[in-house]
Length: 142
Image (cartoon, rainbow, N blue to C red; front, top):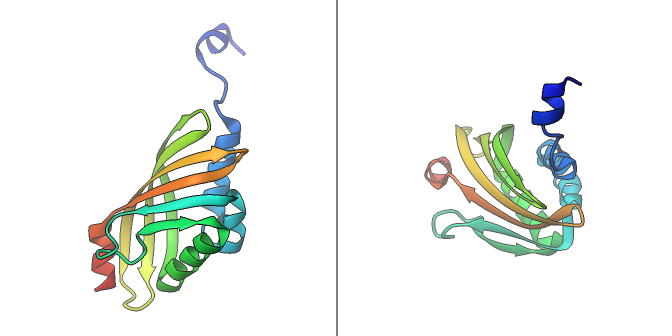
């Protein structure tokens, strides 16, 4: 390591959070494995008006969150999920993602921008807030 690196290049910050994010992205299409990343009493908030998007609401615990993931999976196929940027603050993080999906009913393709705010506890997701590109998602459902 050079003197410059020693003085100015920080060590990788928050390796546990980075590992959690990598597992989240890798397992998101597999709900039974993805749910293991959540605390048993975790909450997932799909933020928005349920009249605009039927998946909006608050889901508590593994059973409700898993049912939500299955409902979304029955309607949409995830084609790609790209992390655009991430900010980590202690055990919490925020990330912006670009998700490519196909609607099973219409076969329409769309790119959705998602904003996720996540609180962790003990290395697992404790609370998850997701903000979606609702205009694009609503077009897929019509």
